[in-house]
Length: 100
Image (cartoon, rainbow, N blue to C red; front, side):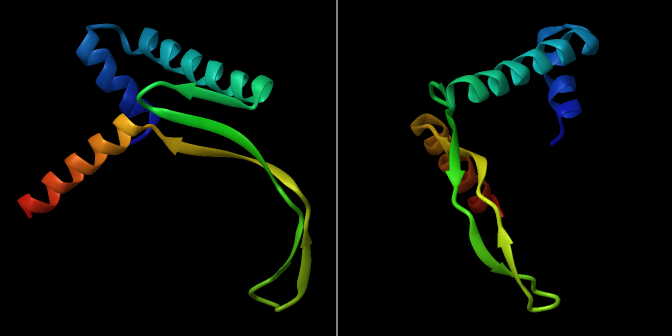
């Protein structure tokens, strides 16, 4: 599913134009990103937690050449699903596997 698919689905359900829905979805994503950058974490109840974590530098190996390379430390965004999301996904996936 793409952002365009999300916009289309929401606009149909709420009877809004796709353009207005796209603006709302984009502003929501922008707000999440802004909060993560400023505070390092955002918790969306019943959905999950996005958090910035520092990944230490390390030595790695180029799989093509076998050459050792140094990977610099970097910041990564992690996601931990909330309990409600986790339970809902488990139930829905269990229902899908039973149908097959």
